Image (tube, rainbow, N blue to C red; front, side, top):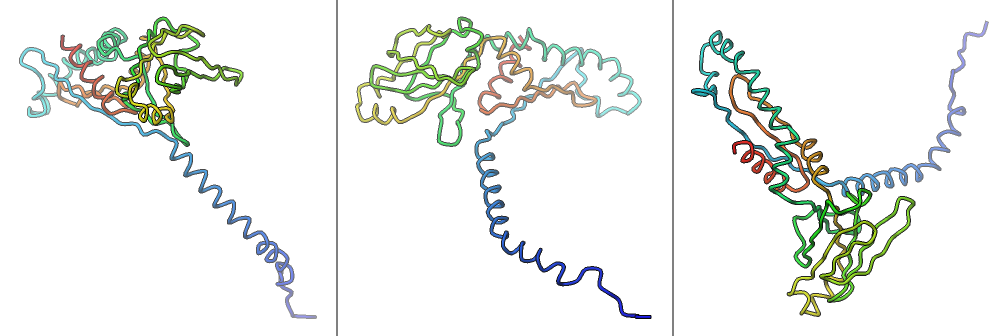
Length: 263
């Protein structure tokens, strides 16, 4: 009997795979580099969101904000009697009516962006353009749509947007005129500093401005979905948190909501 063992996998068996791996190694490296590049682009194009926080103290009688300092049994008994009321107040803070009244005070139907090569940057305002819109007069299909603005001269500009089938609509307009074509209701003015300065006008012509218009119902839905309200246990403190791409906008909304609630 032959006692020698034959290897299950010999060097000759794996040599073709080693050669293949060596030949395709450059392809694996290339795919890794491409994957890294795509990941970087996707990350770069994402817009950061910021959280703003506010606290409201609910008072009833002498207040219940000091229950944490009481004995456990007494505090628990008192807290049970206040918990339903606290939950009711949180429901009011989240209500369509209260948020709607806050939106009416803010009166901000526009989202503004400066567009670069890779992504759009949300901004609080345009230094060279003053834009006035009547959101309630917009066609429903135009609400939330990206409207691109390009300065053509010191007196004219262009609006472009994409249709559902991928076509591009272009509207030529004059600064100061009301544009109502295609379901819009918008007037754009060029700042005097730019209008009478040819160099600044030329610089402004290189910029890509973008806006999105939202009506009252749109804004209420947005802020209701962006806001959370909770209660610090054993206290009468309600904590509100709002997220937005603009930290100033999130803070403004919470400040307005709190003052509207108190009023």
